Image (cartoon, rainbow, N blue to C red; front, side, top):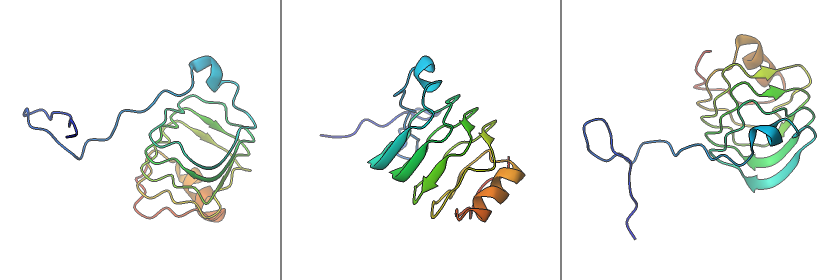
Length: 131
């Protein structure tokens, strides 16, 4: 079966387009995710925007291309996670959050302080765009 590719502005199809963010959680559910624990799974291209993720633990979770815009990341642990191309615009990334062995290659929207925190807590940031 052939894949259907999205059309570009000139009408041609492009394989480089990013998939749409998947809405796994409702806006009400996003306010109740404190203490969430996920391990050894994939949540690629999920919309976490505005989520309250305090004390959540992500252990060996693929979060490629996820949208964390406006999310509250307080005391969150990302252990050996793949956060490539994730978006963090206006996310609150506070002390206590850890990125042990996690890759944030191509991540966008991290503030200078958040980038420093990622580096200090063991995350990899090469090719990370400035906020």
